[in-house]
Length: 112
Image 1 (cartoon, rainbow, N blue to C red):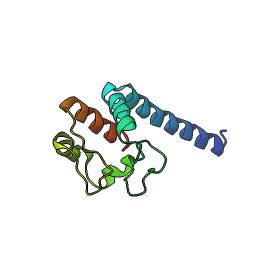
Image 2 (image 1 turned 180 degrees about the vertical axis):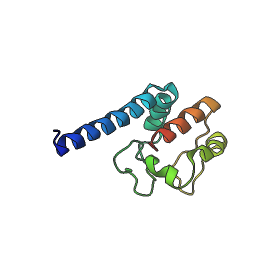
Image 3 (image 1 turned 90 degrees about the horizontal axis):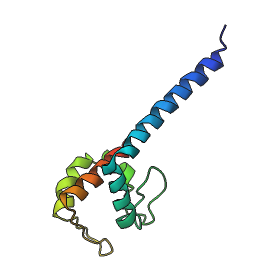
Image 4 (image 1 turned 90 degrees about the vertical axis):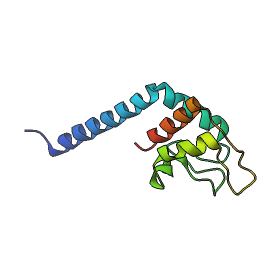
């Protein structure tokens, strides 16, 4: 007879492995890797760009929360045309199509 706790432990381990497999798949995607590098270099000074942590600049949204405001694919046009904000400390970015795809795919990977 199995102990009920062992069933829960096995179920928990299977869920954790499934989650890790999803992260590993995203990590293998070169678009996601390049997007992560781009946002770490250009955005992390003000924004929380990873799965954890707070934004260094309090009013800068955490990238992992962007999908709760709107679909991150909706950012494609803004990234291509240049993101402009009402505060002078944020530089204007215009991404080429490959960079745009990389950043969008990275942001989408944070939704999981």
